[in-house]
Length: 217
Image (tube, helix red, strand yellow):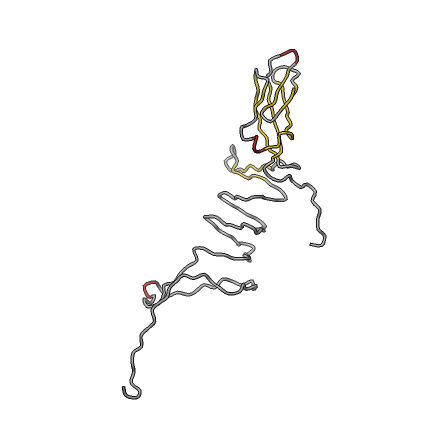
């Protein structure tokens, strides 16, 4: 080999392993960088092909465009131990959460009888996680709970409202237990009434209605 003679080298094999990112977390509230790619038919064959994020993980997401800031999702947004704070959330699908808190709660739907209108109702609120069922009892002296209530509610919290139909029947709650409510009417008069039955859930902790506020936090 003479001085200055060019000898072709051998390019190392490509390593296109899809590795997880590493390093320390940046605390800067910065934009996500988008790489400028050449047209696909001009992309070099001798380098690793580009990848896009089909999955992502982030500690804090800040949508800065207050007028049009949108987080769009056609699948799930999973925040198992974090909070999502938004001025307004609009969803066309389901929002599922272990618990949900708001200053007010309502439903807003297209009006069922006015073509151009909408119907908005506020949610009834109370100092408990309560459930209910209702119906009509006729010519019977017992009201059975739904089968799932045995595992869902504390039966000692059950309350009952009765509305006689057609005539005053002097209907009373004779007793109740874990399975049903026993009725009694004056003189054995046939019973016909609407009922509305409430109870408190036992499968979750009781609602803390007036929690102590830590003024130092």
